[in-house]
Length: 324
Ligand SMILES: [Zn+2]
Image (cartoon, rainbow, N blue to C red; front, side, top):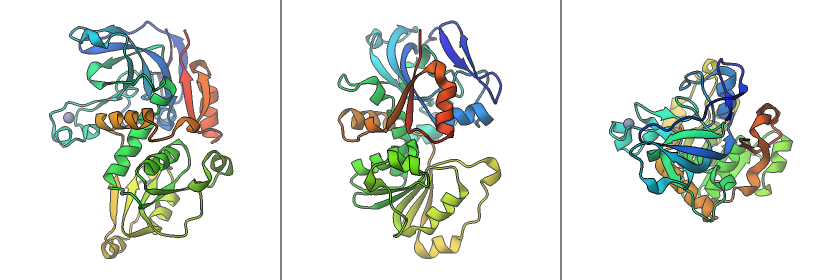
């Protein structure tokens, strides 16, 4: 099969490699489409806390189940599935508290084990979510980025009619906005790049002129973090959604301001299985609109061109199709 593989940090290769065999409790998924995530590019460029090499990246994966490992219910064969990218133990304290994404022995597709930039990928049967018939693969694959937004907004306890400020109008910011609209909150995206702003809907962009109940930083910029904090309302929650480069993580925060205004800092990273179920349900039912956020559909062999589009911010969501 054709696949993209990262052997050393800083580069990737498009190669021929054997189709993997599903182990006990796993299935083989014929990948229909994989989403390109900024994290995939970060992983190739500079590595990642959770990465082991060599690795086939991609954690946004949907496809058909074409083979079963031992012990897997035969009913899964030929099912259309979304693959929740994490594997959690289910028994540690975070798992028992419903935060499988913080599992002490978390294994992530595309990081600890091979992901979807390939014709086939193995996945634990416990990580599969069946895609409703009414939902096509291109929409279903966006359940992964949407899941991470649902986790963040859940942690921030965003409520209907609350004002949400989103710093960064890339795919993550756009998905956060759509999730907030589905929750009947009032989102505003701040994005300096005019080309990106043109890809967002008109109501999603104004200058910050009022405080926000929830502010989410969806761009790896310390300036954005400080600006978001400065626009937080009393009792506001600042969501630390986007990672920063390791040299920028220590920022000074006025704790007295948080104290007097009863404001909260909220960390958010990834998503749990149940967020995948919720995201897929919201996408397939039309509760959240995502189709217009898919800006490019490209063959996997053109990953290099796709990465250039992301680097130059000339795209929203890019979907990649493995070729045979
Ligand atoms: Zn666990």
